[in-house]
Amino acid sequence: MRKITVCEFVTIDGVIQNEDEGDGFQYEGWFFPYADETTSAVVRERLAKPVDLLLGRKTFDLWEAYWPTHSNFWPNVMTATKYVASNTRESSDWQPTVFLKGDLASNVKKLKQTDGPDIHVMGSAHMLQTLLKADLVDALELMIIPITLGYGKRLFQDGAIPASFKVTSGMVAPKGIIIVNYERDGDVRTGAPQIRRN
Image (cartoon, rainbow, N blue to C red; front, side, top):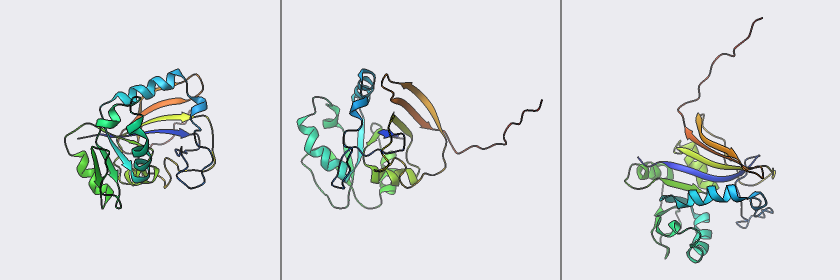
């Protein structure tokens, strides 16, 4: 089964939006003042993985205009299959691209059963909410930036289903970014608090 990993830059208050997208967002580029050699090395390692991509239509529109002329930084973006959640687009000159029409959760469940590399989700905040609510996310690769923005598209914009995750790796970069990877670890476990008696 193909694994879906969400890779996001996220603020302390959960914002993942990093571009305007025409909705008046004022903090474009909020990640970059905190970037350093450590975070750059992690990003390069992520981009070197042979994965396919699952993108929302707005993210795809931005990437389609940018990456074909900047792919020297990320060669794999050109060969990765771009699966795009869209009921309005049917074709693109940027190949390989597959448009997923109709019920996204059902389409992604089927996609996970196919042969191929694991699938990464980047940006795509609106589409991501559908994946989270349908329990289709297997792992999170987050860079938590030490700022709050107060508004913007959030990682868990519409809440989240109850789920447990385990940390598979983590570190703090020199400028304060927490780099942490999580994998799904079953259902939420509960228990009675431990009361210490003297």
